[in-house]
Length: 96
Image 1 (cartoon, rainbow, N blue to C red):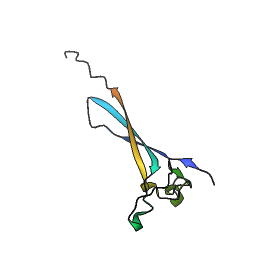
Image 2: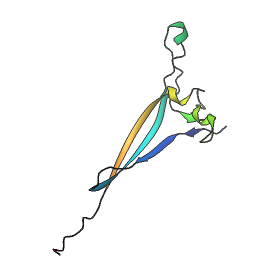
Image 3: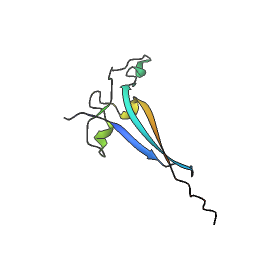
Image 4: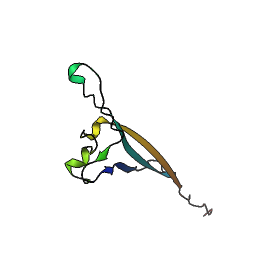
């Protein structure tokens, strides 16, 4: 079985006409927060430190952690955003 770390990137368009901003968001899934003792009124987590996909991207196994067997939604989600700006040259006024 091959273990993978999942990092999701998404680019969002800018709505500013004077400059173009490109936002790249990196999503990482960290420690598992599933409460395995919820049925008996307690609190116990399994200690899984980071989500590792148990299958290829696009399959149902890509959403299951290879380390603990839980769904990806039980893992803490961290989002990092990187913003890059690109200035557009304004048309020069030639007085005509």
